Length: 190
Picture (cartoon, rainbow, N blue to C red):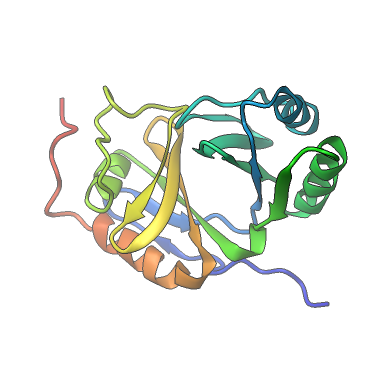
C-alpha cells in the first residue's frame, strides 16, 4: 500500500490573505436522523462534541463536527484516526439506520488566513461574509465559482475550506486569483 499524500502538498499563495493546502485531514461523513437521541449520544461518545445546530460547527484543536444538511454531519479528525471514527460510529449506531464513511482521501482542505480572508471568499461564494452575518462557529455549504465547497472560520480572519480532491488544482487557483489585490469587495471595511 502506498503512503497517503495530500492533493497539493505545500501549495501556497499570498495576497489579500494566505491560501495554503492543509495537508492530510481526516473527514468522516455521517448520514443519519440527526434528531435521533441515539445518534446524538454516539456523536458525543465518539467525538466529544454535542450535536451542532443548523449551519453550525463545533471545533477544537483536535477536530470538529459540522452540520452539513438535515441528515448529514461532517466530522473532522486526524487523518489516521478517520477509520477508527467510522468503526466506533458503526458500533455505537448498530441497529440505527445510518451511513458513516471515511471521505478523507476524496477531499482537499485549504486554509485561508489574513486580514483579507473574507474578501477572498466573498469574491467566490454567494454568502454574506460581513462579520455581523458570518462568525466563528458558523458553517456554509455552498459553491466557490463552479465548485461545491463548505467553509467555516477557524479564528479571527481565518477560514478552512473543504472541497473535492478531484478539483483541488482548480479550487486552489480560484482562491489564489481571488487573493490577488485589486477588485476587493470593500464590504468589510470599518
